[in-house]
View 1 (cartoon, helix red, strand yellow):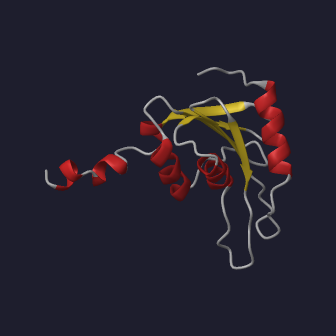
View 2: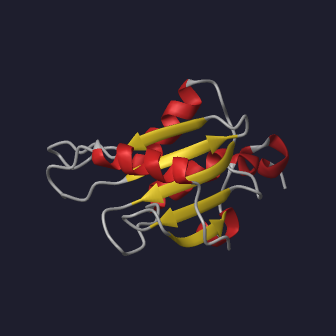
Length: 140
C-alpha cells in the first residue's frame, strides 16, 4: 500500500466533504472517483428528512455516469474523523458495477491520510455483477 496521497486529491476530498449536507447524522462524507479517462468526479453525501439520502460514493459515481463514463480506476472516500469510513453495502455494489479487478478503493482519515486500500475482491468478496446476468450465465 502506498502511504502517500496526491495533495490535489486530498484538497478535492476535503472541499467536497465540507459541502456535504448532513443535518441529521452530522457525519459528512466526501468521495472522489477517477474514471478510466483520468477525469475526477467528486460527490458528497446529501441527507433528507426521511433518512434515505444519497451517499458520497453514489453521488460521485452518478456524476461520472452522467458524463458518459463507465469505468472506475480509483475510488477515494473521506469521513469526518480518524476512523475508517468505508463504503456502505449499497455503495460497494455501486462501485462493483463500474469496477474492474484493477480498480483501487482508498479510504483516508478526516485529514486526508491514507488508512486502507482495497481491491474489489477485498471490498466485496464473491460479488454479483453484470456478468452474472449475461445470457450465458443464466443458462449455466
